[in-house]
Image 1 (cartoon, rainbow, N blue to C red):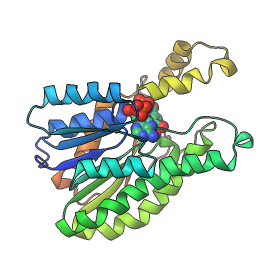
Image 2: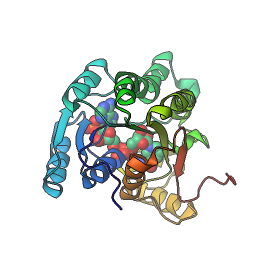
Image 3: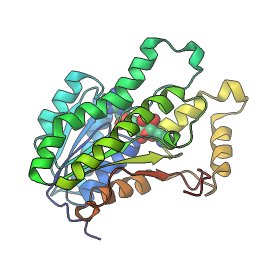
Image 4: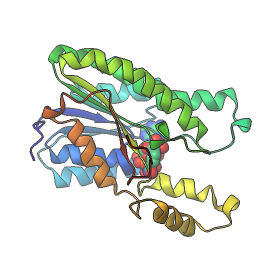
Length: 260
Ligand code: NAP
């Protein structure tokens, strides 16, 4: 299926690994020029090289920086040029007990998982609207629909973003600019392994045992493959996806038990 976005330009934030990388790869496969960002230069360079090799007709720009900072965002926006597609992503906040979180911990989470996407949208959405094409995808979490006990910082910050987008996404769609959320359940990435490592002490299980148990408890009996996530992102960025806005698509193997 040709999604009709060949030659478009995308900024995919936090994309040297995991879900962000999968989105960048899926967009590049559609002929979209991609700008990738991450803090670590080495892995980012390897990912950029991998995409260039697989899709030689696509321009791949890499920007080393922290997307949750003003400077990181400015560098990414400057390098990416005139944007048609924006995929918002950043690392998730650490797990813990809210009794131990300070105001600073909350501000960090809100900065990374709520205000950073809003700032990037603010910088790009009017240009997209004036050009009558824009696709914005926010990578959030299944925790937006069903909170995860130990991830209170994530539950809170991402729900704030989702509420804001619910309003804004109805104001942009008339100009063919859509804004949607992709809500990952458990996907097989480093982040998932990191969360499991943090549960070793409390559970007395090894990382592998925690992961195996978690995968078997999912209705699908497995974790998601990042490629599946990237393809969903590319679909939402497609030329014919202009009637889908303000939606929050859960990709969790059926873990959320609600009827709708
Ligand atoms: P991952 O495999 O750990 O990859 C994270 C990527 O983001 C890396 O490329 C990392 O590179 C980059 N990154 C992190 N913080 C950044 C920052 N401040 N500025 C720029 N780049 C940054 O994580 P993932 O599993 O893909 O998760 C992506 C998002 O989805 C996270 O917010 C996570 O909480 C959320 N999520 C994931 C799952 C899951 O099962 N995987 C489930 C629910 C929600 P550097 O470290 O080099 O910067």
